[in-house]
Length: 166
Image (cartoon, rainbow, N blue to C red; front, side):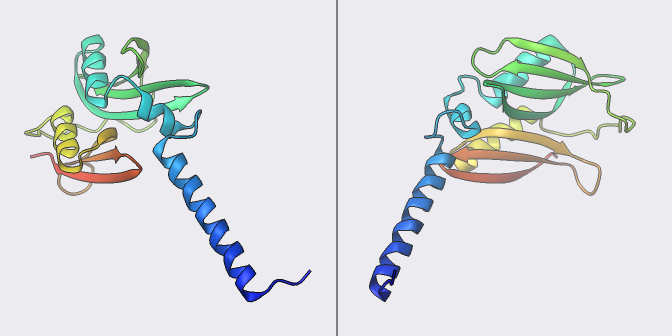
């Protein structure tokens, strides 16, 4: 079987178009069952998940992550209390607490820095900057100045925003 140059170019262009459209559909959440689709259809925002988690375990929220496993979407929120880290799992569909437990991290708990803004305020700032929804956010304070790293999603575009914690 012999391809002409024109036929080969058309075949490659078609394959690239289909591949690009598939990647775009996946990223936009148009393919059911994907994490992207689950995130785009979740009813609870990252900031709301933080509120629900802190209501369950009083403390300082330092991280929130959207997860989708075994058909269930939820946020994992890490809260630091006086003496330990707690993990609270919040249902992304209705805000119900799925589970809460101590975070048995092998590393000793590092003292938290004093910051002028909260995780929720950093999320709000990142969402305002990008026009997207926050998917993940965490306080980074082990090296250098304290910053919140917030990942937002706006349609198919992902952004990582760093917000000064002071």
